[in-house]
Amino acid sequence: MKKKIAIARGDGIGPEVVVEGIKILKILEKFSDYQFDFVETPLGGQVLKDTGTNLPQKSFDQMKECDAILFGAIGLPDLPLGAAESAISKIRHGLDLYVNLRPIKLFESLRDKCPLKEEYIQDGIDMTIIRENTEGLYAKKGAEVSDNTVINKMIYTRKSVERIIKFGFEYAKNKGHSEIISVDKANLLECSQFWREIYLEIGKDYQDIAQKNFYIDSFCQWLIRKPYSVQTVVTENMFGDIISDEAAYLIGSLGMVASGNINPGKVSMYEPIHGSAPDIADKGIANPIGMILSIKLMLEESFGEKTYGDLIEKAVELSLEEGRTIDILPHPKSDLRKGKLKTLNTNGMGDLISQRFQTLLRK
Ligand code: IPM
Ligand code: MG
Image 1 (tube, rainbow, N blue to C red):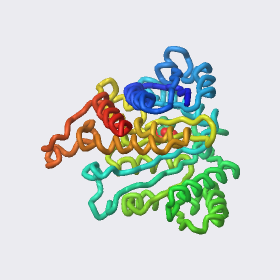
Image 2: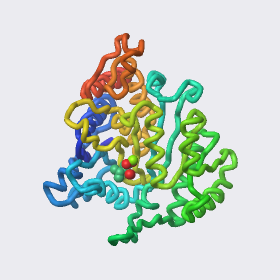
Image 3: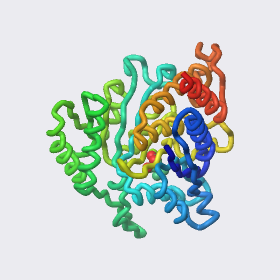
Image 4: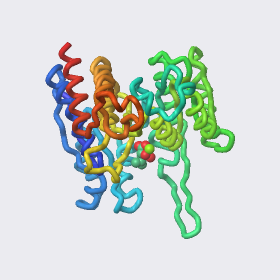
């Protein structure tokens, strides 16, 4: 099976983690029928400085021709706010990537890195946040800027709300989840009232799944109070952006979380949620696991390939017992630190996971 993958390395730690993602795909090539053709599609802050645009037309045209896109991160501190970042909106809108899928799973060996006490973790944390990815405040339509007033409009259309909520219910059903939560602010915002109406309507077709609603403020609290109970969450764009960073810290680090910007059946884009992190760029200390798990998501969501995805996750799990990047190392005073757990740089962590993946593929 030949697959063309667009490689959008970007800025900051983006390029460092993309290398580790490609390593995993190259191992998979050796042990399976997959053959990957990597197409470089430069974008981001540095590209903006060099060429005057953060997403050259050639890069975008090539992305459209690929089977999937692997995205590192974008953003540079010396550029005006949003100058580099708008490239990601251009891709999300341009390819109509209306689902932002963000699985949040606490690996058993990272329990010590969860900031919550045991009673709040119980049997573990394993949830998926499904974020609407093209509308809301991110629709960027009708903004008005003057000296004394600035207006951003939160826009929702029936088509967009219906498709994301349907995706959420189908996802919950396929995963065998017993409950779904919709997060809104329907006690105040018309957009949210519209959202909730559609959620309740579509929910009638999924009577086997318990359906809850939370206001965004109350959900932020629920997320730290009973995270072990949360399964599928479906929400609008900006609420999803916010709660996914909160949830990420529950599993140890922002560096652990993968995401898929998906248009089911069409070219989709996979990226870790951590961003360009300029403060740690070029130091070789970035955690590549969010990127490596993004490869798992790509295989599952774009190529319908569950087995290899599961092996990637297993390889990560095994590796965490042996070595870790500094963001997920146990506290220096912890007994866990006295064992044989190695401190690894980005490259070392990627190599270890690749080796474990290779061993699993050989079996
Ligand atoms: C994310 C990021 C982006 C977003 C930024 C970089 C614009 O925070 O993917 O979560 O807000 O969507
Ligand atoms: Mg974000």
